[in-house]
Image (cartoon, rainbow, N blue to C red; front, side):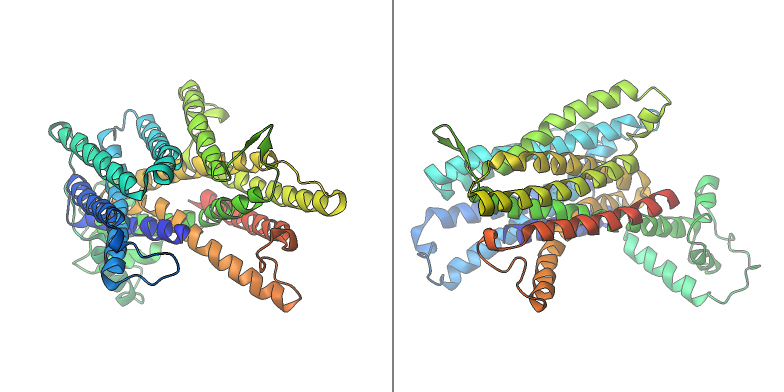
Length: 457
């Protein structure tokens, strides 16, 4: 349920990005989305405070209690989507300087750092408050802290760069597709530049890729800018599609690694490591890696060497995909080792065997997410940057959803040839190692596609 909720809120960022680009400024979208999210926290806090709205376990909630819960959760999901879509591009707009392109890269790295910092606090302090003081106090704290965050954001209004929305990019893209389809059989000799009103570099870019859309320019209602932004969006989709499998790795490790940890040796002397702390460990790795990465990037940014090229967005995403493959390979080996030691030697290996795969997938997630945010923002047409940057979060959402589909398909296929790989409640009788190996192979194939599209871009 947690992954489905996260996936739903992430995939809605594309809607928030569309609103930012089409109708409202990013500042306004953030304020409205923040208000909706705040309302969700207040509703959840109110329900947690009143016992008659919390049904006992294994009993069906009343219609009123169910309505409050679902409205509160939907408000939080919608608010998170709008905030993520608006804040990342609004922040990047403030440092969008052609003379200092490195500022945008640094912004997205530290933006991701701030998100992980919040996740770390939620996984430690907020979890302790929930367990010891109740859900009501935790939701009230979220509401109060978020109110302060909105106030701080509003205080900067006089100094913000606020870019005006340019109307619906989807409408313009549909017009381009319709016009191109109508003029499919038009003669190539027809002058398609009669309505080109944009700058020469935009006109040149418009005719470099996806040339079949150029025939849309025969229509008097279509100009080069409309064709250019359509091509810009379409050219980003292959990169977006080839990052989804990496997010499947993250989703699988967040779920199955916790189950593995429950049946591994978690003792250090007399202290037992909580299984939930494994996610904290992953966040700690990310928070440690980003400052180190920024320092290296700062050292090499003025050098025209192979080292400086490795910090380009597509290169970072590629390295992240490779690390994702390695994390799945390590996870398969560790699971095979765990079962072998348990069956043959009756030994429960230490939970610290999971550390390496967490390091690999955490660094991979950092490189891929920060690289995607920068790439989609920088390469998108200016009129649709919020919607394109939201593709990064949509990739994470698709990864969460597809991970569930992969489990179902794997169980269905393996069940036909004997026993389901992940069909039981006990991992000791499942074949999680083979499932990890399967995901590793799928990621290798996916990486080949990524390299092809990245070189072609």
